[in-house]
Image (cartoon, rainbow, N blue to C red; front, top):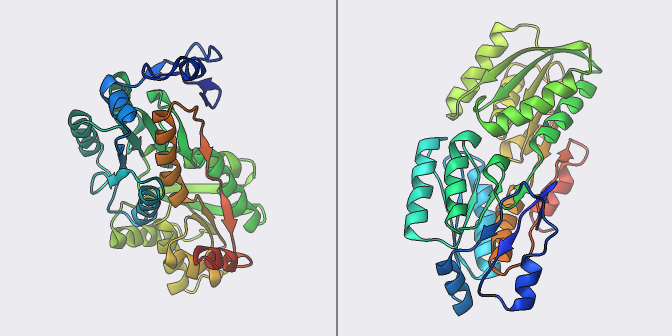
Amino acid sequence: MKVNINTTKISLGFLCPILLAMAQTPAFAEDQPAFTLSKDIQARATKGEKPVIRVSYHDVSNEFAPFIKKGVEKAAADFNVDVQLVGPVGADAEKQVAEIESLIQKGVDGLAVSSVSTDALAPIIQRALAQGIPVVTYNTDNPTSHRLAFAGQDLVESGRIAGKLLADTLSGKGNVIITTLDAAAQWSLDREKGAREALGKYPNIKILTTVNTGTEPQQIYSSVENAMQANKDVDGILSLECCSTPAAGDYVDRNKLTGKVKIVGFDMLPETIKLVQGNVVSATIDQAPEKQSYEAVRLLLNVLKGKPVKDVDTGAAVYTQKNIGDYIVSSKGG
């Protein structure tokens, strides 16, 4: 079962010899631990019982969570499985770990995890795997946990794309601030790494600061406002996620800075779409969140069936004023 360069081996004792041989084929990397389903999960799968899968998201209260939930609900309907979105209110690693521990104790057939913190969540993911519970990651990866596969965007690469977009929009020169809901979160660190790599290739672009906005809507706007007032010569804003993108756009729009301060951000919140339509936000990058959670469930079901799984890259589609209409039409099913 190939996962990036490494591969993962699934052993299912209840399979017939031919399928067992397929599941335990020797073409696996030596540094990736073998994975064996627990006897209880094997027994339930053999009986054809409806799998119980939980999709843990790192903050179910943020504005991105409904997109993730939509994918979970679609998977529940398409695959006829017991699957629910769970997770902490607020990006709280301790609460996410505690909830996953409870799910392990109750007994689930699979877990999909988007980690608040890679370091904090890796041990509990490893514990679940050691107990024979398949775990995949989505949205935010956790490769050190030895998860079986990842469904989501290459976060570092998406940061590079965003950085280059902003640099090109600024014609290769200007002062930039970076905004993020949580500068210490792994997804933010990864995206910022890529963005700084890309912007660093332009000697006439200077990154003034990274603004840690927090997660409350008013707090986000105030953080952007304070940063703009503290740095009077900002030419561009690179927002690393869903929720500081519209806040940056609102600030620019309210202060009649459209065209003077360029913005590149992420995700497809309704407010962001409107700001792109008005060219207040020059570009936003989609990561297909519904697909991330949907594919995470599909990956887990394949593991339960003894099928090989590999990472699913949900891409980094760029939308500007020129093509935002395409997204609007496709999102309505038109």
